[in-house]
Every structure is written in C-alpha cells, then in structure tokens.
Image (cartoon, rainbow over all chains, first blue to last red; front, side, top):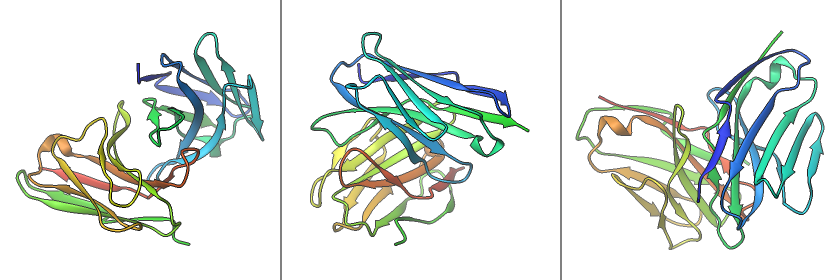
Length: 112
Length: 111
C-alpha cells in the first residue's frame, strides 16, 4: 500500500513532442504528490507538485494531471526540449509523515 | 548557501571494509534523509531523522547505521560493506515535507 508505481521505465520523444509519465498509488491517505527531476550526475530536485484538491497544475511547460478516483497522476511536458532529457521521479506522502515514497523513475530522452 | 553537501563523491571498498558517508546541510532544516539509488529501483529510503536526536528506519536499513551528529550533520555508516551495497547514495534535507533538497550523491562500489 506504500508503493507508487511509475511507468514507463524509459521514454524517447522528438523535440516538440509531449512526453507523458504516469504514476499510480493505492494508499488513499496520500495527500501530496511531487515530481522530481534528476540530471545525470546530480541529485534530484523538486520540479512541480500537486495536492488532491485540484485536478491539474501547470508550471511553465510542465503539467500535472491528477485523477483522485482512479488514484493516478501524470506529468506532461509540453513542447519538450533536449534540455528536458533527465530522469523523472513521482512521489507521494501523507500528512504527519516527513517521508516521501518514490516511484522507480522514468528516463526521458528528447532527441533534437 | 551550499545547500546539502556530501563527502566523498566516489569511494571503492573491498568486501568487509567499513566507511562513513558524511552529509551536512546549511539550510537549518529539521529533517534529514539517506537514500540509495539503484537502476530500476528508484530512490529507496535507508534511514531518516525527523529532528535532531531522533532517527528511524526506512525501507532498506539492513547493513547500515546512522548518526544525527547535530542539526546540520547526518552520517551513514557501513560497518561491513557487501557487494549488494554498491549504489549511489543521496542525502537530503527538508523543513516541511513539501520539498526535499538533495545533495550531489556518493557513488560507492564494493568489490
């Protein structure tokens, strides 16, 4: 119940495409869903996050869509660029706990 | 601000050797974490410290010990390294659960 399942494991898109990364969870107590971006040789960094009281959140070219009934959330990258090539992790946490549960990651390659 | 710093950046150990990974943060955060990252496994929590003086096990604590030396520093110790502990280790800190700040990582190889 503590798991967050992430797919796909890897993804290749052309520049300008819209990669979509999906995550699913079981624990309905989760109430905070961040996405982290990790470039090679670096630590992960917070990219964007959503709480279940909204169905969508946009920050620049990055959008999170959230489906509470399906217990799923996804990351969309509009007009993707080669500089977006990185590993993306979804995560979840619940109130009262400082811990994050991470998905297994998606390696994205945006070709020029 | 340096953020979260980790030493060393790289380390090679032989099976059975011990070592300590150091982590420090200058953001005055209460919570600190140790993760390991393995291909296809994502980030797995080893230990965390919600506040100075407290530590708790995460998902994969076996073979590791931690010390929260003070509010700034949180170290991870491998008492008898095994090849299964070959991984990239990340330290992170946070004030609230909303954002964890990660260090640059330590790449450890155990032969």
